[in-house]
Image (cartoon, rainbow, N blue to C red; front, side, top):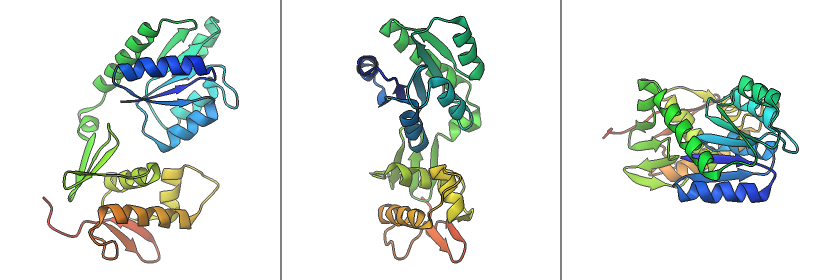
Length: 233
């Protein structure tokens, strides 16, 4: 499970990071809300721990952006014990709230509880979609790992998100702009060359012969689609 910690106090970030890693979690850190949002936009995160008062973008505004796209559990940390802050945070969609100073053991316990609760409320369809298989390719969404014929494939964050988007929508044709909007999440900017470069990188990893792709097909004048040519296992 991947946990994101966003706090502008390095001592607190490091303490939480070490404690969570000792409990088997993968931990990503950010020192402000903007940095945290950049991570959330490019990597799969299962739970976020957010400080309320952060520079560039505070915890409340970050939570607003998160809830536009995701239902991951969010735990707020704050140095302010104001009930109105708690009401606002929970009203915006936070799942839990801890006032500083807090017990690190209690925080770790609350992280585990939120992750268990999140998993319990997944529908049977959502649980079955944790692992996706298409042809000889498979993706473990919880571990953010890609496999070909059972062997792991190394992909960058954008390549992973692109391939995941295709595997969640097999046989569907996407324009370059649609792919860019889906993965880069930049509504007012578009670079088709960026998409082509990342498609090429994916092909170099998943295709036996990138010049004769069996998975990612180019639809001339339109875009790309995932269409497996070959015997499925």
